[in-house]
Length: 422
Ligand code: 5AD
Ligand code: SF4
Picture (tube, rainbow, N blue to C red):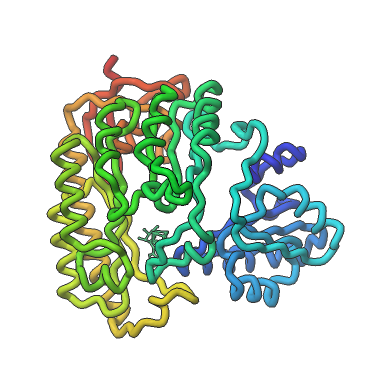
C-alpha cells in the first residue's frame, strides 16, 4: 500500500541506497535478529545521510509500536525524518506532509483503533504481483503466547466485515487476480468479536463462492480450529489443499509455559482428523526450539511429534527473547550451543520429511500457477502447485499468470522441477 502511494507521488524505485532521495524502512518485531538488521541498515544509511542532508528517511512497522526501539532510534539516528507505527498507515500522506512541515523528526505512533479503517477505492495497483494478492481478514491477536510480541505491537483482535472482504476478493477477481491468501494472526478466531455465530468456515465458504481460482489462508490457531473448515475445504476445489498449523513445541510442559491453549494430544487429534478427512492436504508448521527451560526430553517430544505429523515442511526458529514478553523474564539456563545443536537436529529431521514429501511428487501431474521468472535461473519460470509447493519449469514469460498441468520430473528439499504436460 505504501509503495503504491509513493509511486502515485511520482517516485521511482531503486534498490541502491546511494541513489535514493527517499528511504522507507518497514520493520518486523517478531524476532531480535530482524530488529538488529534494521539497526545495521540504518547504520549504512547514516553514512549516506551525512553526505546528503536532504535525504528523507522514514521508519514504520511493528518495531515502531515498541517504546524502547523508538527511543534507541531517536538517540542513535538523528537523520531520520519520520517514524510511524502500524495503526496509522492509512494516513500516510498526512504523515508525510506533517513531517515535511516539521523539518526535524516527526513521530506519530498510536495504539490500535477500536474500529477498522477501510481504505477507500482501488488499491490493486499497489500490490506486488498482478496474479496473487493478500487480503486481510482480521488484525491483532488476543492469545498472548508468552514468547510473542504481536499482541503488544498489533493490539486487540479485530475482524473485518465479511462484506468488505468478499467485495475486495470480487474486485481482485475482476482485475484478473488468480489467487488470494486470507490473512490474520488467528484466522480461525475470525468473527468472534461480532458476537454472532458467523465464523471463519462461513467466511471461507463465502470467499470460495466468489469463484476466484485459488484461495489460501494463514494462520489458524490449533485449539480454535473448527473441523467445519475441513468440510469447506473439501467442498470447494478453489480452496487449496494446504494447511499451516503452528505447533511451536511437542512437549505439554513447554506448551503450557508458552501459554499455547492446547495439549500435544489435542494437536495430534486435529492432525489425524485432517489426514483422514483430506488425505491430499499438505501440512506445514512453525516450531520454536530453545524456549526457556526446554529440556532434552521436551525437545525429543518435539521431534517425535514431527515424525508423527509427517510435516511436508516447517519454519523453525530459535527462541528469541522479546523485551516486555513474559518469556523474556523466564529463567533460561540452556546454553546457546545446546540450542543451536537442537536447532540443527530439528532442521535435519524437517528437511528429510520435506524431501520425502517432495520425492512422492515425482512422476505426478500437478496444476501450477506461474508467477515469475525463477530467482536462480532466468531460463526457468516459477509457480506454485495446489499444495503450495514451489515448481520450476523451462519456459518463457508468457507462462506467467497461467495455470498449467506440469509433470514433476525432479524433486529437491524446497522445490520441484517439472515439464509442461498439456
Ligand atoms: N522467538 C522465536 N520465534 C518466535 N516466533 C514468534 N515469536 C518468537 C520468538 N520470540 C515464531 C513462532 C511464530 C512465527 C511467526 O514466529 O513460531 O509462529
Ligand atoms: Fe503471537 Fe500467534 Fe501467539 Fe498471537 S497466536 S500471540 S500472533 S504466536
